[in-house]
Image 1 (cartoon, rainbow, N blue to C red):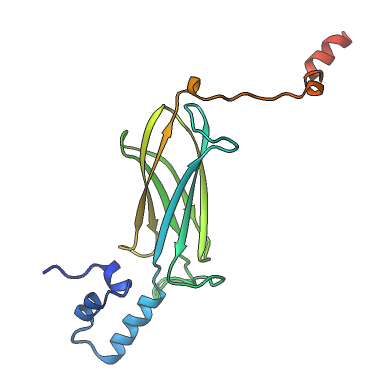
Image 2 (cartoon, helix red, strand yellow):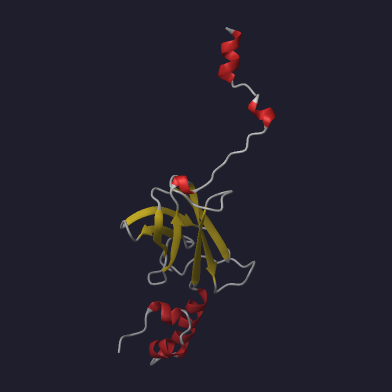
Length: 188
């Protein structure tokens, strides 16, 4: 059988921990248990939307919101420095967010989440470059611990420009306001 993954050990899988802890001293088992309580356990969720619009269409400036939830700490708690005994100073975990377009095999956007709270998020803006279905994968990569990365899928449908009604209401009083150029031309 394969050895348990780092994620399985950290997440508290009893079978995985039992395999790892076999043959270790009591002090070593306590060290591993302490580290596993400290190591990050995260879940991410993603939403794509266009501000003040119900539909997404080609050419829109859309926003991808990525929410990161640390399941190993309570609300109003914060994570401390990472377990890096040989690092010269305190180091806090950072999560790099990479967005991959599965159809085009392209990286769409990237950002970093540096906050230390239970719920953290980032917003990435992008232009919707084509109509149709978009299937993306959002990866959250930890800069401090290997093997604890996570990902989620995000899907959205972009309509063609002519399929969306983007009527702009202009108040009659606003329609009579002159531009700076018009005022300059009248003064000549």
